[in-house]
Length: 361
Image 1 (spheres, helix red, strand yellow):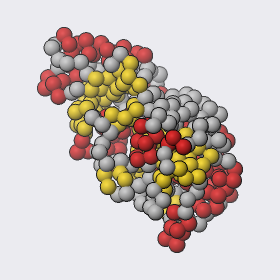
Image 2 (spheres, rainbow, N blue to C red; image 1 turned 90 degrees about the vertical axis):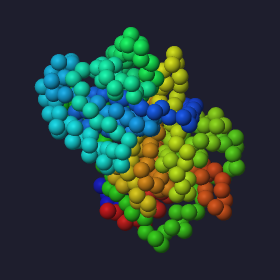
Image 3 (cartoon, helix red, strand yellow; image 1 turned 135 degrees about the vertical axis):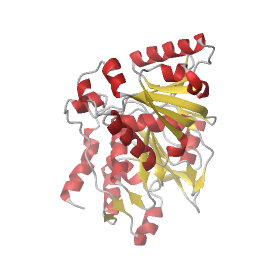
């Protein structure tokens, strides 16, 4: 491993206020058809989380992109004259959906205003939910949209809201900042591929083993839970989580679909951002490191959804997380137990030493 890579892996020193653990809840019944809308200019990490989160709560997503005419009329943000053309924005969204194999669950549409698609025509009849950000102006607009639906004898949409993705300084990542040529710091770490000869080393238990979440210690910092079964058990037993890393599979078998939420208030459901990661078997790709870094910058819980396998995600979690974080994961047969350990410099060095036996790609 190069000196440059080792320096980047010291990113844990940047986490001034890592996410506090919080009680989460699970819902197994997804909505039928969710609508989301925006300009989706520059398609940044916040957009990725927003789009993927919509797919986490609904079986089908109507993804509405503001037209060039609509941007000119409705955009009140700075540098709106620098917004990319509709075709550029459309193609970036299309690439994202194809990359994550979401096209068969998506309907992409062009809109000229924030309301008509969900209020008029056949499309309005198909919708039963909407995902928005926690921005006050957006929530007010969504309530107005539901009032317009009720005036036309349409059922109000179930409202999901998601916190904005923030950077290391606590500032929301936005297309406005990108259009202003502002540098948004996210260090890049190389991708790694596990060598077959170290599989036995990887499978050795790395911490204390317990039978139940009831035996876990009180968290002293962020709680990073890895694996769907582990996350579900922690939620069931009321153990708080900061970052949940899931792949909707258990031992290569698909699980019953579900979504995670943080609270319900006046019919509005707040969900954690669901950051998407493509990570093939036996790999830790660069994007996996980046998404864990982003999750550690957030003040609220985050879900990282792995398209592929999350088996090796403990490495970036251990290396990147600040001291006193607790990592919790499942130890496969013959143990079939929960494993946990607290992060300190010794644990971090142990993970880096094992990672040095991987191939850098």
